[in-house]
Image 1: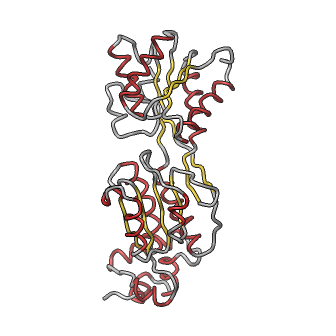
Image 2: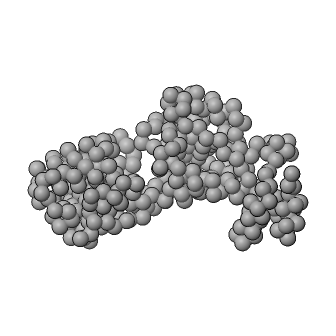
Image 3: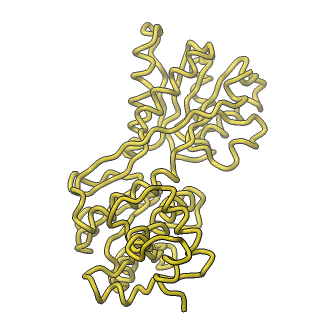
Length: 330
């Protein structure tokens, strides 16, 4: 079996340096980290988690919980988490509530029995958990994509900035009568994207025009139906911001079926950069969330909390990137 001393000898560093690379106890240059990790991979060294646990109160295991860990949104976050855990020699235990019939208690019980040091919880739009349920774990935690309370550390997409940038993009592309197809009123992401959108219009020269805002679900049918509602009520609308790509796809399909040219007569912008948005009959201008970076940041924050180097209640907002495609660009 390959030992840590074998890795150190092969890499030309001390055993303590290898240990610091694996555990993240002390700052190590990125060049040294990459070199040591390459040697670890080549030799097939595996950290002895049981021995490490005996020497400290930590198991070296963290949990990752999501409604469905196979969903693309989640897998990209997981990749970011693994970038950090692999570097630190930390093991991940995954729990998908889909495996437990969406029974939160059973899912959390499964994780608690795994002797995890902390947990990352990645939220999709279908999940609904309360602070009291999460606090029952009695371990450090970080949530992604949902701000549950002031007492829980969260990594969040900057939805307000996304909405603001959407308005500015439509205006810069020549749209003067804007509308928004928002998601449900009780969804924080939808609220923040709407607020940012309205602020973007307010800061422009379109102060005399009151934007049309309608609310639906985060799905194709809502986009199709509400695009019709908007354009039937006000045919002068020439720019629509949809709170996600599914609704944007529906709005584009409505326009196409009713002879409205995109983007010449109507510009449509979505959000989330879903996998189909690039290949839609009219490729969708959208915003790509920094999912991998969100995963990396959540892992760093959680490990800091576990080792008492960080303070809970942090709220980290990360901006999305505009991707221009044919739904707004001729």
